[in-house]
Image (tube, rainbow, N blue to C red; front, side, top):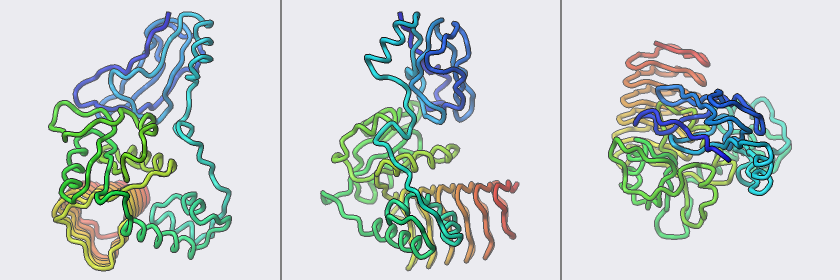
Length: 362
């Protein structure tokens, strides 16, 4: 006899959860009602308990996104059934990095200037090493890679006349991204994730409920991806971007047609830039950022990757923003200010001096 381990349903707002802790090991004997895993949603922490006594097999890892009512494992009444099931079905647990073709990390070293530049623009060093095939990466090598990235995004050509895009994420942000893509002439093939039922969702086919199973979808069906997940799960947004990049997927930008972009601006990939925003002359934008509506980026700004720039944010000239920064609504940042990595700025604040790494400004 075998019993499924099912993610509990919490409420309509918790459409996806992240596995934060796993308290047992595969093959371990558990008792009915024993706590086996802890999940975290937007507003709640969800505990998962063994549905029966027996030998456990989990099919998730820490950091994985799961959905309410999803089966994430089994409990077998006896050891013989457990061993037979694992052997016949090859359902031994895999990690995210093993879910698809194994990606080998290249062996390489960085000069100090190269490391600093990569950190500033938010590009993992292994991406550069893999692309350029170098064991020693210098600052000039990094500049060459960045130049290639921007040119590749801007000059990308597709098999068909229209770019075919898949949206990663099926929450409220999917509608925002869908609206931008349709408004800029792209074909949206479908989305990945479990759609919310409490809000209006775009009329799209769900290609997969999970990122792992989406890896099996024929890549000839689409050209590029875009992640629709934003606040408050920017950590998940970054995780998914890295996950898909390591598997060789390409990302597009979703830039609303009302956005004003100055000359000599360089923009990476995977960015969502919402209506009525402006990016001034000579600015550099990294990858996988989310810009809310009405954001005003002045001239010669340098913005890294995986950042949340909320609606109504305004920066003066020569502002530098690092990676994984969270900036609240209506923030004003004065000229030449530097906002370091992983810092947070609350809504409505005027920033007159540098914000340090991991600093929270309220």
